[in-house]
Length: 341
Image 1: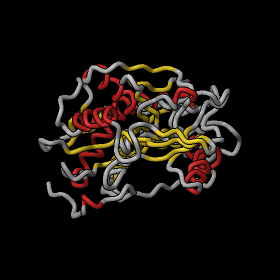
Image 2: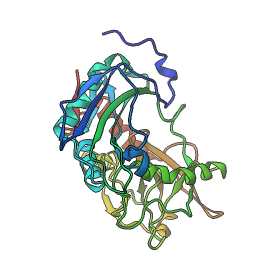
Image 3: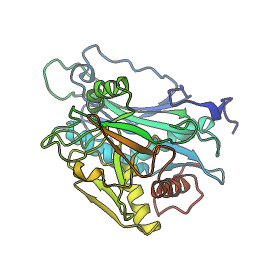
Image 4: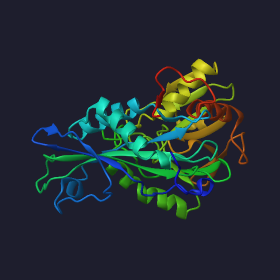
């Protein structure tokens, strides 16, 4: 198979249309068989449920070329499971988890020429999503839905390496207690757009959201979970019912404990504790780990000992281990790697 003529090493993190995408429709209480199509356009009613009441959810994962030349995906079964949770919370029909994984495989195979080569720093980003497609004018769930998956080649999230970022403590709330913060609903991200753009206008890279009820506990950013390293080397991540359960975070915690032999803890993290941490990072699919060098709390700065020049040593060890597993340089735990071809 011949790869597309793309300058892989200079790809940005953006959308490039590829050859095929998967589409399946839910109607009269059942999903159809679904198909791969060359048509990248979505045609729906002006009154579609997704346009009126934002009934939509999505996922994000990647396909990689490993060191030995295989094309693989990382833990797509967990994306299928998380989308099931999102659908149930939003009164949407669940797309069967086994069919979800197979559709991911089919889309990657059909777009194999777009999977960047090993060592390029680029990957194939895969976006499954679902939305209410029939006309809905009263406030209620749609009756018909469309499930789609497209793929696009993307460059590394950070050009020139993952330099530590500066974030601020945000005055806006990301998610309400007992709300939808724990699922990947499109509306959650729309709500975060003003806050992130405001942060950028103020010179910050990201927001740190605190819990909406007491504003004393660390939750997450608009699109990533926090991971902290204590001064005695323990890995700590915040625990809350309104935090999205990041697949990257769960994988990093497993790697830390079971492969690197570190002590790990998932618990409530009070903001007062943050100043005593040795390292801080944001973890997610796009960048794996984004190191945080500084937090601005309304003019007061928390500067981590790891500094503003490079990832802290423990964070770097975690990053190298997980990317080593994803790229085939390290042996993966059973079931983590789905070989496409």
